Length: 253
Image 1 (tube, rainbow, N blue to C red):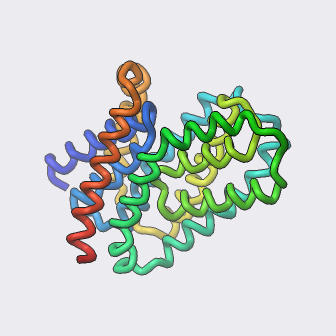
Image 2 (tube, rainbow, N blue to C red; image 1 turned 45 degrees about the vertical axis):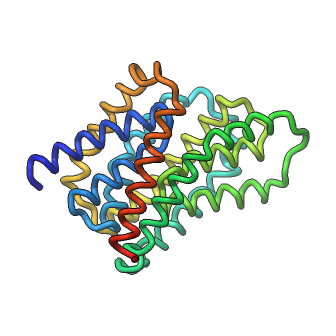
């Protein structure tokens, strides 16, 4: 990897951490940057998942006091683990050529989820007014599907999880976010273990991205939070759409 590529990955890592801290969806930047420097898409997915995992752990530590009671957590953790394992195994057994063809659609799907985040936020707030609780199996199945999405695609799955939790549980938003952070870390951990053992991780990419995401998260929390999240998210969405279309032309059409 030459100095220009290394600089690009460091800059992408800072942007990933910053956008995750403010508007979400930053992992799409890191994943795209890995592909841009010549790392094959499947390896880039493995590498990106490993690189952003420390940030997931840090999020859990920061919101640990806001977590719901133990029984509520234990009710959904097995579904999250199962979904994460299934999604990760599915990715590991996907042929490289098939994944290369799927990548443009995955990037565009993640961009669409980010674009819909404001609408999901409104649904989350309105759900707090509803009465009653869904059947536990409904919540577990939904969390399992979220884990499947996280293990296979990853980008934007934090948004998916927080929407599922808020729509199916009547909890304060701080508890919902803390639960989302914990489930994201658990799902990411299962993916990291499987990808390290059975996947092809570019460790140079991890070494460049991981510290940069920590720096970016700090910068995002201190500086970018002064800016409105909507326009920042729009930048990531526009980037994802353009990059997805470029990949579509190159890999599929």
